[in-house]
Picture 1 (cartoon, rainbow, N blue to C red):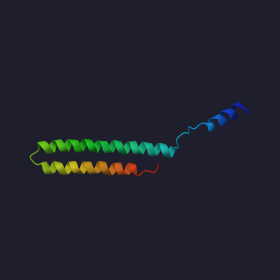
Picture 2 (picture 1 turned 30 degrees about the horizontal axis):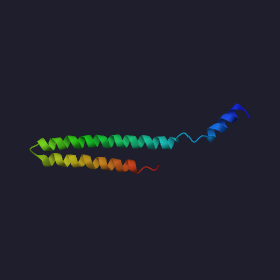
Picture 3 (picture 1 turned 90 degrees about the vertical axis):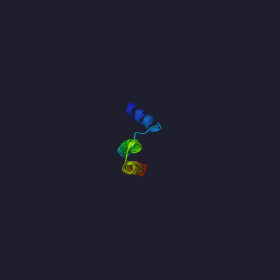
Picture 4 (picture 1 turned 120 degrees about the horizontal axis):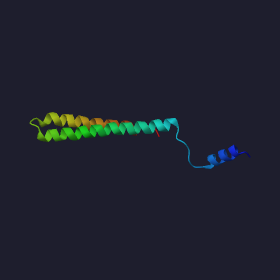
Length: 83
């Protein structure tokens, strides 16, 4: 048995396996979607602050609700990926 055969036999006996390109893509997609959802969360917090200080809180409340709904929708996309 050659050194290469021994190495290949040993590698195949190990529990570790390299991720496939699809697994890498799915993981990076989930991360990017979570990052986008976190930005929506930041916007939601900003508009909530504006709402508390504003003469027209309804306007800022609507914007805050929109940002919150955006974050929920983005997280739903991330959860929808097949693993």
